[in-house]
Image (tube, rainbow, N blue to C red; front, side, top):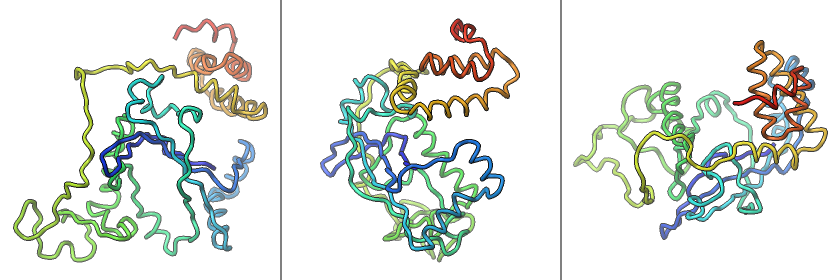
Length: 299
């Protein structure tokens, strides 16, 4: 399967010029999926099927690889683009910002100790290298602090000292001392900054690039002229095959059928109808809801 950053990030070069980017990981193996019925049968027999399949493939000498591509949006485009480019529910059309391939991601070795290398791994969008920065993406902004909070709860305050979470060419240098520790725990060094003992100090050259903001602070809804249904409709009409559309309707109907109140079913189906009338009509028929009620729903 393919992978996507989903979030928009900011890349800043050595001269301080910034652009907005989205990352794409394109599988070199091709995309292959189970139907809902096949997935249910496999899950009943082997819930770890996908993990086992990957492990056995690599164990047998194979690799799993992806082409790494980026979409680049000029910094100024973000403020005038036809929809909010920081909205995680939107994709950037490739005709506007084509994919640029710049590398590969390759998995070619299995963990030798699952707990040490997998269970203790702590991934967060706030773990950024110089030149890669966050964007105003609201969901990304929330994840920047909530993910590390989870790691501190799950693995302790010194989770970045666990070998699997340490940079290969460096070691985390902080003044954190509490909780489970690794190594010499900072030795006899101070646990505060600034200090006169040559303790770790911030590197000004790695600070986040400044950017200009203007406007009135307040609480607002989404003021960008977004249309939340155009891209969903385009996906249904232009991207999915006829067979894929049929499976999509079937999968969604299976979830909506369990809802006991008809008005809630209608509200759900209305969203798909607004994306594409045929889509909503087929879904209403599959769930057993009068299509005319969906058309007239005022939500």
